[in-house]
Length: 97
Image (tube, helix red, strand yellow):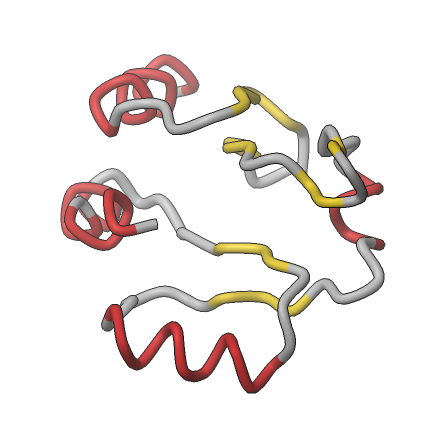
């Protein structure tokens, strides 16, 4: 998520709204957000309901890091496991226009 934080202005310039989803507790989210100074929200998904809705892969009971680009109609336009580079994500956003 540090990559998203560091590139946050680029995402804002592209009219992208960044949200991080995590099953950790709200207390852990607050501490983590404060420590790393994330300018975007961390959404609490303790029961994995949101992750399940987007079919996030699960390994050993934990959701795998997956990046999605969802358009205004709530259609997934991009999905990739792991940590895609900011340039790749911004290219995918530009191709949606």
